[in-house]
Length: 222
Image 1: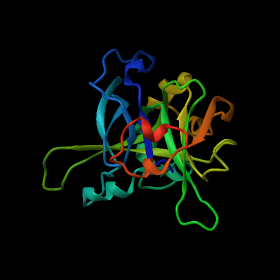
Image 2: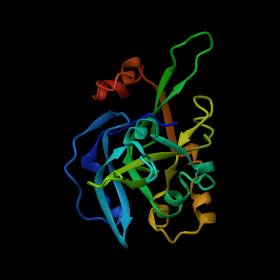
Image 3: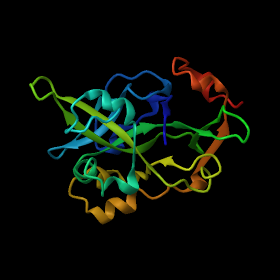
C-alpha cells in the first residue's frame, strides 16, 4: 500500500511534462496522509488539468462519502475486474506528482513497524498512478471529486520492505495513462513494477507515523 507520500520540492515541478502550463499554488509537503487535498493531473474532455483533489476514493455508487477514509489505495491487479473500480480504471485514471513515498516493514517479534522512505536516485519528481471519481448525494448538491493511489506488486527494492508498492509511471507513458482511449491491455502493462535500479530506499524515524509532523525530519535517515 501507500499510506503517505510527499512533494517536498514543488518548485521543481515541471507540469509541461504533463502537457500543462499552469500549476495551483503549492507548499512543500513531506508527510501527506489520506483525506488530504493533493495535486492531481487528469484529462477531462481532451484537456489535461492539474487541481487539488481529496485523497480517498468515494465511488459514484457510495451512499456515504465517509467510505473515502478507507479507500486511499486500490489494487491495480484487480481494479479492472471489480465492478467498484472497473469504470474508473478504464476511463478516469490520473497522475499524482510526488518525490518521496513511505512504506512500513514488519519486524519479527515487534508490533511497531519500521518506516522507510523511497525516492528516485536523483531525487526527481515522479508520478504515481491513480484513479479519480465524482460523487454527489442522491438529494443533489455539489459534486465531490476524490482519488486513490493504485498499488502493484513490489519490485526488487521494495519486496523486502512491503508486499505492495504504489504504481509509478514512466514520463513517456503519462499521455497514454491519462487518455481514456488507451486499451485495457495497455493499461495492464503500464501498472507493472517500476525499475528498482532507478530507485533508492532508506530507513527513517518513527516521526513519520504522526501525520502532524510534516517537515524535513520525516525523510532524514534514521
